[in-house]
Length: 118
Image 1 (cartoon, rainbow, N blue to C red):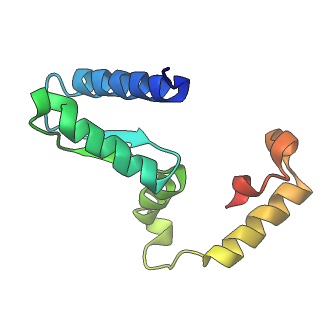
Image 2: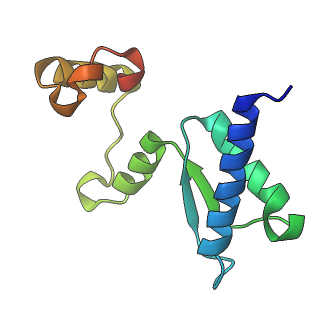
């Protein structure tokens, strides 16, 4: 009996490997960013790609980021925030919760979900 979740995951990883291979076809050192839902899945993805790309010889310049991590990295280089520290997580969580309570906008259907602001 096969597990449908495992099958879907393995197909998704195989498709990701195909896409990364295509993205690096002309330049194997070209950076590729993969968005992942968690740090653990980021490790799984990069390790899988390392085992499977280039006939199993490895991969290079592949970065797996959660959306929050990518946003943090991109904004850190902006001149307006150079030399400033990011908000502590508790204050950021409170500000996000308040904004979603006051003006949920497109997030109205899920604004009360804890995962949205964590």
